[in-house]
Length: 187
Image 1: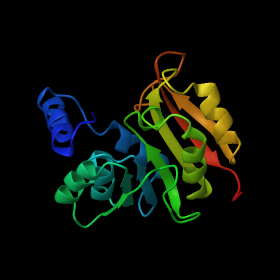
Image 2 (image 1 turned 90 degrees about the vertical axis):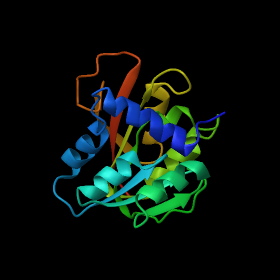
Image 3 (image 1 turned 45 degrees about the vertical axis):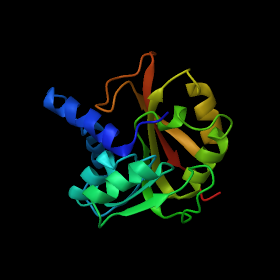
Image 4 (image 1 turned 90 degrees about the horizontal axis):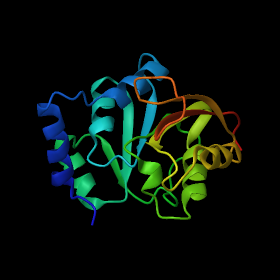
């Protein structure tokens, strides 16, 4: 059974009290986009940790998640942001609207099996030409990097870079990867 929003938030509050830095994803996104304004879709936003931090930094941020309890927690913390309840494989999102889509927190391996292609296609469609899609996940459990890159390429996303962490440590193989793809055309 998935964690409820309040349980998820409590987990990250504990990480913070243990001295862990919680904004590596937002740091990477902000570094890729430069100074605001820019539009960001936080795909699989959970309780809004990444979206809220990006909005605090001045980015126009929208969060989407399939779990109502997660969005309830996100809305309670940031009622002025746009939070969408929807499945990433089928949600009706605007075409060519976002400068960047971020899928943090292993979103890609928590998808319903068999929906990976639909999710990648739907997310790619929302990104402007030249826009970016960045996703970090444990590799091989449900989705290999080769399959992820293949699905991305099939919808006009070209691999730009891959790191081992959100802090841009070089990827030399391993269990976790952060992949950056760019939308080459409006397919």
